[in-house]
Image (cartoon, rainbow, N blue to C red; front, top):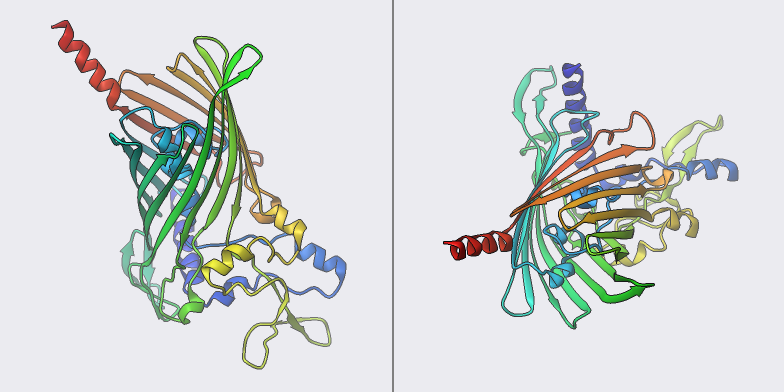
Length: 430
């Protein structure tokens, strides 16, 4: 069985490498132009959006991972940089560090994983500085020549380094941003389909805001409400080879996340929070290209114009600039407004805390079947003991034999304020 897994891993990586180093047009030819209205409706049933470095969208921490990947308006924690940097403006602790680990796609391959290190420091003024490192390992692959002889081994990897800053503009409103360096080394410079490959690199920024109202009343219960918005990974396209020029570059996953939360203090020891997020990728939707057919109706491939450009049957040209791609992403789906609505992903989550020491979490994530079909429930728990906190999350797909099944996440956090208080108490006792 392990050999089968490794063989699949190698094939998966090689197919992916060939995909990203081919011309951009080749990534968009999945969708034929049907000859009848009924056929066209069927063809539009699957039209997923692909980008470079999708690992940037993987939930890195266990807290949000236990709440259906909802986190844009949750309370501030060590992993706020990923979800909404402006949440750091409401940080109550002076210093915190956390580390998370996620074995990824273990239902398919045994050696893909995501590691995440994050932390923040609250300055003496109104601002908070944060930083994080995300490292994604895609396991081992073996390169062979045309005769099947082994010519080398390589471990593809991707990483991103973030620096963030957030500040309050008022007692209830904070803004924040982050700068991100992205490096994606999938081939180690190997030749793929005759092209010399290279590591893909890009720089991106996040912009975000959070409104938080702490003195709400629900009957006789105290409550806290929050609304957050974050637009992340706004940056240059990424290319893995020089072949094809700018048309060979792919969008990175520019994403918009909007959400809210409501936390109710049930009594002195018990509280519960309800969260909801909506996500949308701000990148072009693949169009439908016109195809040529012979007299028997057999597909002869994509039709090209006199300048050797593929003819778009429906939708818009995906080879656009970053700004045009962002603003055009709201109206470029070949299926019109109905397909645009399908591109929204939804997350809902619940979080219960007992005395700020023990937490139980649950959530649900929904993605439309035509846009990737990720649909799953999540469960999670957390415990705090002195200066340490431990969280874990478990993912339960709604369908059997799903690549995401049995996904576990682990997060360990360190509360340095509690550590200092503990030291002060020890010194006072002496």
